[in-house]
Amino acid sequence: MAVLGIDVSARGGFLRESGRTTPKKDASFRNILDNSMGTNRSDKVPYGYLAKDGVITYNGVTFVCDYEKNAICLGDMSNPKQVLTVPLSGGGSLMVNRSNIGQLSKAIGMFSPEDVNRILRAIALDAKCQQELHEIDEMEGNPDNFTPEDTDTETTGTEDPEEEK
Image 1 (cartoon, one colour):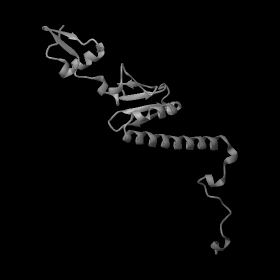
Image 2 (tube, one colour; image 1 turned 90 degrees about the vertical axis):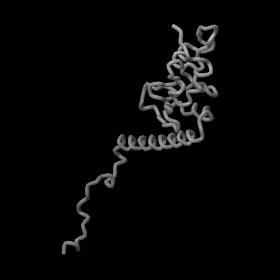
Image 3 (cartoon, one colour; image 1 turned 135 degrees about the vertical axis):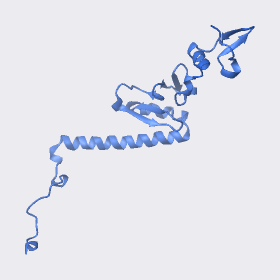
Image 4 (cartoon, helix red, strand yellow; image 1 turned 90 degrees about the horizontal axis):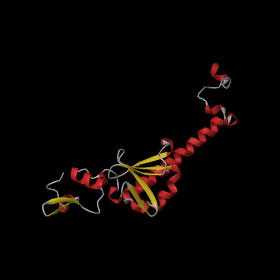
């Protein structure tokens, strides 16, 4: 099956040689198919132009492209409670496992200044929330930390006797 009307300058996927259409030698089948259908997968995730076969490697840090969620992912995504999701300025999101935030610092130069700001704010907010959750867990786990001021009930016997008159 020959694809007609698509050339290298228009789509980047097919070459015309003496009346036949042949795939470019350096393009993978998936890229050729996506380009011929007008659905370039690199446009479906943020920073997808850096991706090669669904993987972005920047300064030794590897991001995996999730085309279904329109996201780039760093680390293990199997436990959603451990994943920080940051919406990015150009659409899509960055999903980072909390245990991989140190790796993210090595690749921060890959992101636009606006996205760096979003990422840093999200990490700071997440750290604050995680600290508060940890404090709540400590309070719930240690009944000695309980004080009467922690309840919404009013105490009795502290009324002023002169108010009764």
